[in-house]
Each structure stands twice: as structure tokens, then as C-alpha cells.
Length: 82
Image (cartoon, rainbow, N blue to C red; front, top):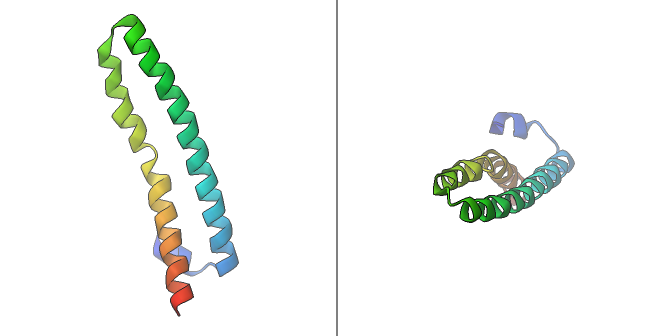
């Protein structure tokens, strides 16, 4: 998501995109917390601690949603200041 693409949207469309991105990021985050809880349980149950290496990569999958959300918030903030 580039700023050029965001600059062509109206303020209402930006708020809609913000709400969608925020909901998707929160929903995906909740699913990841549940999955990581199950993973931690399985790691300690089976004593295969190498499975913990999955967790940092899992958190990196949230980054595109967070970056997109911050770009939309920055565009909304810049429009409100004008």
C-alpha cells in the first residue's frame, strides 16, 4: 500500500480501510495468540523445544497489517491537519 494510492481516496474511504485493516489485524492477532498458546503447550508436552523457532516468524506475519494501518493513520492525520 503506497501513499500515492492512499492520497487518491476520500476521507470516508480511508476510515473504512482503517476499520477493515484494524479488524483484520486484531482478528489475526487473536488467532495467533491462541495458536501460540497451543504451540507452547505442545512444546513443553513433547519436550521438542526447536518448535519455539516458529514463534518469531509468526509475529512477522502481522507486520504488513500493522504497516498498512500506520500508513492509513498517517494519511488521515495529514488530511485533518490541512
